[in-house]
Amino acid sequence: MLVAFKYLFWIFRMECLVQRHIVVRFNRKTRKIYINRPNFAGGNQVYDWDDVVASVDPDDQVVTKKRKREILMLFFFKQRTGAEHHDVVFLGAPLRSDHELYALWEYIRRYMEEGPESIPKPKCIPSFPWPWRSLLAPWSFLENKWAAAPWSPRMIALVLIASPVMLLHAVAHWCSLLLCWPVYWPRQLRRESTASEPV
Image (cartoon, rainbow, N blue to C red; front, side):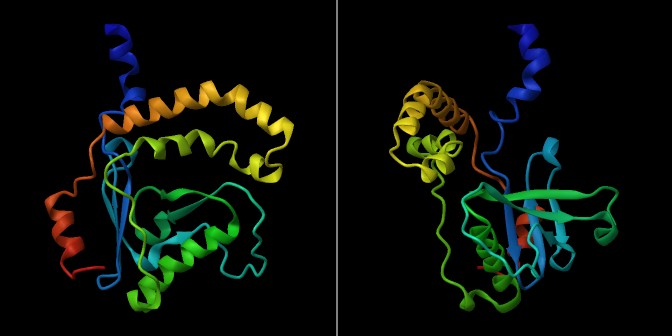
């Protein structure tokens, strides 16, 4: 156990005994993006809104609702930021289509460019990690296949066979969230990011 703790703790630390989420805060008045994350994942960073490059092509006119797992990524290239390295942050949960991907980016863009009056009020994720939310983590691997052929004998068999592993994954996921703590903003970032009272 001591050898495993000494040499494998860095893997364990990625999911347990660390802050619960990587949080990104957008401040339209200062036009800054604040990223709060553990040091081993890049640490806390502050970037200018004009330096962000999203994994969305604004000139792409084809926005389909075909189901696939998409995650919105925000890139901060060193040529723009002046930093020594490129940076990237994954924003939100996996989405169901590039239509949802575009919608999320448009929501953020309109907030930063046009203001909160141009968008609906956001839905907040509860701070306490309820166990049924952990069931969604393993289910996300089968969600698109299930949507393509719901209640087919093949899919029902696959879900039944995979359900013990999915349940184990969900329990481990929930335990890891219970071992983590809510995000704490350092005083300097807290003062800077809330100085203009962002929505």
